[in-house]
Length: 269
Ligand SMILES: Nc1ncnc2c1ncn2[C@@H]1O[C@H](COP(=O)(O)OP(=O)(O)OP(=O)(O)O)[C@@H](O)[C@H]1O
Ligand SMILES: Cc1ncc(CO)c(N)n1
Image (cartoon, rainbow, N blue to C red; front, side, top):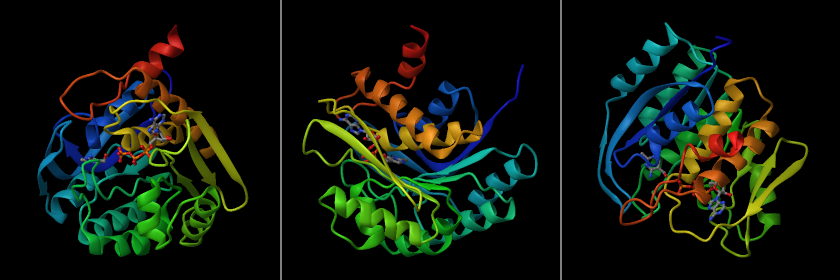
């Protein structure tokens, strides 16, 4: 057995298995990384929508992270649904305490169906406590708008928003283009404080995109855990999500989950 790479996800549970902690752990596993989790909230959720949100106490979140930090340690950390300002502050304190520098923040705010997964007043806590610690942030366009107060329509707007997020202390900003449904390409933008890189794939016509954001950020985290550079990690994540959407599973009655083992299969074939 060679090196064991480890990644920790701090996020909510999606009972339907397509997003949240379930998507993260499946993605870590598919990319050959040992996955660990600290749960922030339980959601009753499926492909149709979110039927309930049940946050855990701040203490429960802190204890889980402490259990991992004092024993196993981790090579990279991802945050997803954090629910409240109190949980955000506690997570930021733990990340600082354990000096975890490979931190990917997926600033999850609302589910595909519009149900809130982060309290509105917690957006400021994200900016104040967590973004300055992040190696990578992966907002979609509406999340980038909420974090910057900008209206983002063109690629030029996106580049300006990336610059603003960089100024909040994030080292690499990825603004995803899944929501930009103009045109036949899905383009993600990466800004590292100096140059802009574009990751482009054919847009796949499908309603089965539940958990795409979580899966993409988890793939970046897994690659960072292996010691990859951010640009290479984003490149792999883009290929991973493309395969996952392309080979969707067709399960559930609404927006179905993506296929977390498709990337591995395309690599083997
Ligand atoms: N229809 C599609 N075809 C190809 N790639 C897509 C498609 N939809 C999303 N993507 C890609 O999937 C990744 C996630 O982007 P997206 O903007 O959907 O995230 P998100 O809105 O945060 O997802 P979620 O709804 O899970 O929160 C990005 O790399 C994006 O380009
Ligand atoms: C638990 C959870 N986290 C994140 C998302 C965003 O896709 C979701 N739908 N559910």
